[in-house]
Length: 162
Image (cartoon, rainbow, N blue to C red):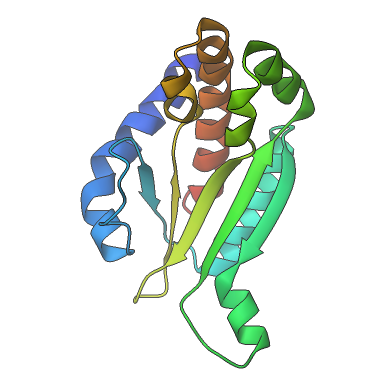
């Protein structure tokens, strides 16, 4: 299968599915029109593990992880699953900084995982092209297009049905 055609189709599908899923998973109030929201059949912990595997499987780096729900659990408080996974890679960082030092503020790029009332988890993220678009820089746009394909592939792998 030609992945260059498949990956954008995944993103389009995610955008189409996003409106109702966003409301169900607490994403209805996002200020970003370009947010990709992908509901899954996975529980929060499974999606978290699948995300980590997909990130490394696509040769990206897990730059940071934070989970409000896991932190709260450590304090004896139970809240629905909620966490972020920050992803990037140094070769992209170097290219980004060569194009715009100010754009360094945007890296790493974040995936957001949320748990719904039914126990299933949703994956949300902004495509790198949307993150870097405000800079109006052709070199950033080119790099972001490459990252869009990688980020969509990571999301597709992590959210695929069991």
